[in-house]
Amino acid sequence: MLLHKTTMYITRECLVVPIQAELPDDALLQIQIDILEKVNASSVRGVVIDFSGVNILDSFLGRMVSDTTKMTQLLGAETVVTGLNPGIVASFIDLGVDLNARIAFNLDQGINLLTPEEDFVPDIEEEGDEEENSCDSEDYNEEESLKDDYEESTTNYEPPTTNYEL
Image (cartoon, rainbow, N blue to C red; front, side, top):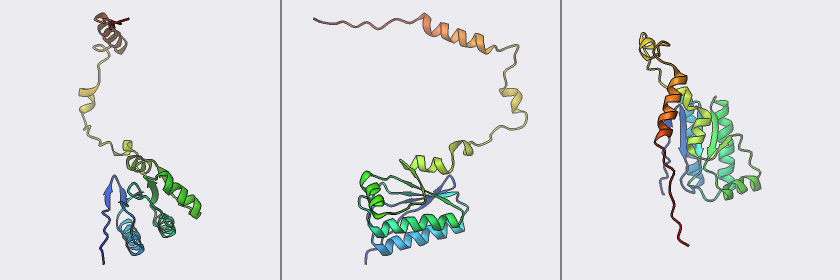
């Protein structure tokens, strides 16, 4: 008996589940159980199931993904499916599978759908730093500064020359 293990990991409050090969049904059921246990045990906002390594979708995998998205939703986590190729998309449609999930082109977009990057900008400014980082209106004039930058960038401009041989 071959042991199939999918490495799941959490990043930016998302559980990422890469499916990198066609797996037997028992391995898929174990992945579903693992996903549900991790969602229940952690405070993830969502699950990203990445299909970038899958070339063939059978009815069992389609049903498993659909059921898993419904189950994670009941546990309070949204699911995003990523990495779909045209063949997988056609299979989902042919099988009549309702994903109940948002779709993203790739893993980064999927994670951003669940947890936009601006939500994770660390607040590094401490009290008193505002004065050090702010511009004093007497010392700084934004319009003049932009004008100076423009003049400086255009003063030394030399158009490119191109030699053509006929």
